[in-house]
Image (tube, rainbow, N blue to C red):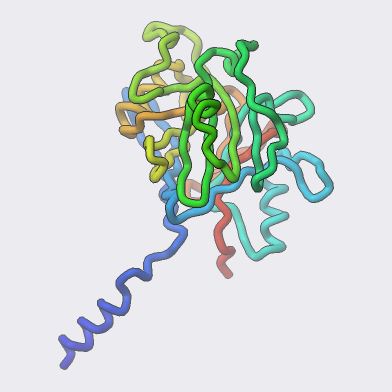
Amino acid sequence: MRALLALAALLAGVGTAPAQALDCREVTHDGILYAICEVDPTRQRLELFLNDAADRPYGHFSAIEDMLAAQGQTLGFAMNAGMYHTDRRPVGLYIEDGETLAPLQTRESFGNFGLLPNGLLCLTETSARVIETLRYQREQPACRAATQSGPMLVIDGALHPRFLPDSTSRYIRNGVGTTTEGDRAVFAISRNPVTFHQFARFFRDALGLPQALYFDGNISRLHAPQLNRADSGFRMGPIIGLPVPKSD
């Protein structure tokens, strides 16, 4: 009888795993320490944040936390998510809640954003895909949210062609990698200064992801309660985060 009761209890628990299974952890690759947060976009709803209800840039994770608290939510994790002008406007394509707030940029331009090919992160109801910019322009996928940045780190399993193994340019860097299908997304920030080549190889070789996009460097920020981490500093432009129910 006890065995039957135990089996019934086990069966009753099947499929009741928490809907917000977020995995933040630290990983070392080639002697460099990274903090990563991995989500399942088929089950978890990532969101982009730029301006508040008064059309003012959030700027800091804490401002988003204040907004979510009124809805009984909090940030499971968050990260700066793309380059921006001095007034916090996105440099490239930015879509939030289906509304395009900044257009796609396909021309050569300045800085890391202009180190072509660049790309974007496209969020749908069931996926999160890193897509190279010209591919996005050709395919025109329906993104409920998107943020453009650059350069691409990994494109179809190959490192960006302009990354040099012996580069001396090292910064704290952050970005995102996804499967081609968009059913796995990993957000990473280096703990140590890294080159583009090292950062790209981390996504490809350590995480096994064929598509990866650079978000920024030097001003990179992460909010990850699982790691007891809540970075502060410069005001940010686009921010990506995972709202979760606030525990009592």
